[in-house]
Length: 299
Image (cartoon, rainbow, N blue to C red; front, top):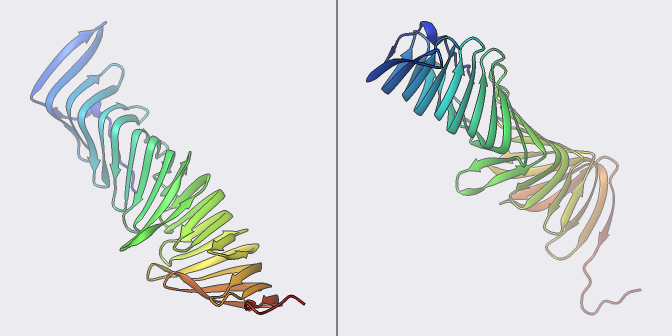
């Protein structure tokens, strides 16, 4: 995401259907009404009503506000912008659009000096390149580094054509747009096709469709898989393999057998989103419990 550069409007030309210059409590105000446009060579501001406070060096914008430059645009119902500090406050259906990102929120604070935005309530960060949606009730975004944060009941959705989205919940998400990565921290729960994953930390590479975890606990039907670390690979938007290191698993076969195994690496392979086999590499140790027939008796 690129930075939206808001120039100092006190030296910027403007136009409107109606212009009034008034004084309120000794303060000079330029009141612009109808089809307001304030622009220079870099930035264009559009709205229906604007009040430019020259002595206090800020402008108040109302109704269909759009601030745009070559890198993108911010739309809102109303906004304040302080020229000297390069800070803006936008409210009411705020929508920030750039090449690969769309951010929406009830309100947004823009800091042009430090190049970041702070979002409040109903925050959504959409990665249009990778079909990812991030939700939270609070968030902030470093425009220079292209790094976003989501907190307060955040969740991530990975949209897939013709399939249910992959859902991930955590206490906090950090989105690294330049690297096509995101990270979930603390009490992570991920729903991927037929499996539920619980872990401390979750990382996903959007470009390669690979994920890694710390202390994963995986549940797939009656099957369970635990380890110190783990990883999984998606293929054609479906789960292909899920592995843990220094792990233990309990795998139930279709005929009713139960396999309890431990090993350095345990991998479960999937077909059509269902677990079909398990492979243990490195110091395997396990117990196979055979399904008993109706005539079998305990020894």
